[in-house]
Image (cartoon, rainbow, N blue to C red):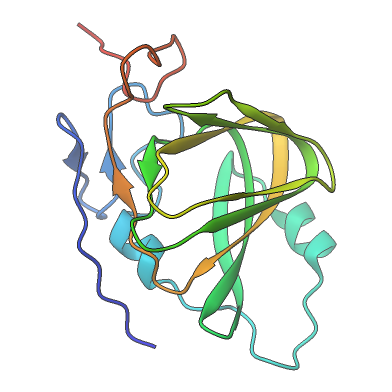
Amino acid sequence: MTCSTGLRWPLGARVSRRGGLQQPGYPHGPDTPSAEDYAAERARFAALELVDLHALERAVTEPYKNQVLVNSNGECMRLAVFEGNYRWHHHPRSDELFLVVSGELHIEFADRPDAILGPLQCMVVPAGTLHRTRAVGRTVNITFEQQCAETVFVEPPPGRWSRTSPFRSTD
């Protein structure tokens, strides 16, 4: 499947030599995949191939890793292992289902109270909903979304600035 994305970057963001997004205060560094790379990533495993989630999770040593494992019916399943904050964003045409495997995942929203998910809890974030995920310690979650889902990164909504915001001003 070939993916085409219409990506928009937040004010103040720069693209690194490797195509990764650089943002002031972003905890995962400039070598994380760009939104285009994220959307275009292909599944690591084919249909009928056994996937050992526990072994894949144990193999992650970096503070952020999000990878497409399998595709099914136009959707992809991702394994995300991370610490800290992800960027504020939304997916214009794709719901996103989060299923926590271990740790604690906070899903912050612009217009409603935050959700806190623990192991074996899940939540669907509807398409177009502005959100950001925040891992408390090392958190492992499975996400399901459309293959090639467009991601639009945005500035934090008013009142959602914090010391740990990836868009925190360094002025």
